Length: 197
Length: 197
Image (cartoon, rainbow over all chains, first blue to last red; front, side, top):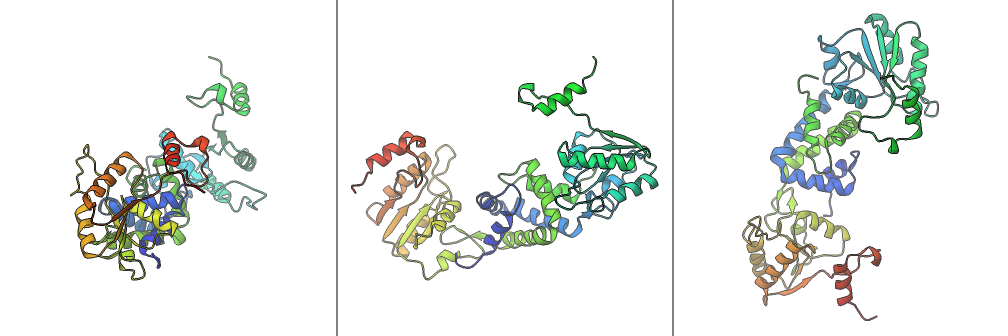
């Protein structure tokens, strides 16, 4: 195999996906070639379509196939309650739980002095605009329970203070979690937020 | 997300790749959307090209973008020595070592009474044809050291007996292997095939 064949090119590109290395990329490509009718051709088509249409929702920052994402466009979703998340993966995770019926706002990251990411690099100005125009009554800060996530939550809470009801996700023992395997921080948080039964 | 968007379709298809599940497929798709210019579009193109052109080499069974694979077409490869492997992944593994300069024959699996795979389901008749037409002097049976692989090797050895020199890959301690972590079968094989220094 002296020259680079189309198959080699495909393997190199696949190996750049997160979770795949050169070995699993080769395995995936062989699998694709074996199933070229049922899988490879539809996948090529789906990728071409997403590559051509995917963009950020102008309103909330979710990924979408048009200017406005299906959630922002859905008239059945509750107005007035906004869930702020770090990125689209978090939005998808919230949607899978199927509990939240309001709308989202995707920041696109967290504040980070080290990486030079300030409020203007995130979608924080746009969040303030939405509060004004969409008559939002509650903002849920569903940011990750990491240092960066919590710093960002504090910053947003300060910025929005007094303009809207603010809440954050409860912290405590995860469902199915065993105390023995939990870190001290989680146990402390669960203990401090204990509820009378 | 009530209707199935192009992004959902792409996630579903990606989740059917070996080594990816629903969660890693979502992660991969988000990564692809973020890098749609550098990665998603080229990947869609590479897949479309492979889907359109990939087929089995009529001579050896390798995957190729034409009727004859680059190895069979390469006039610099040695004629007369044929390495028999189970599938294309094994051929690629042999090629990566860069040592073998002869030609290959891909069986497309192993004999299996349980799965109803006999010699005619594999490329064994074609192997016999090649022995006759290509003036092969040596056949290396590079089949996996599994029960099915070794059964198949024995069957082929019986079929070709007397018509050609037969050899198989050496068995023993892998390079970098520690005796403590090797199974008994490998140690037995290495001991039986020991070499005087």
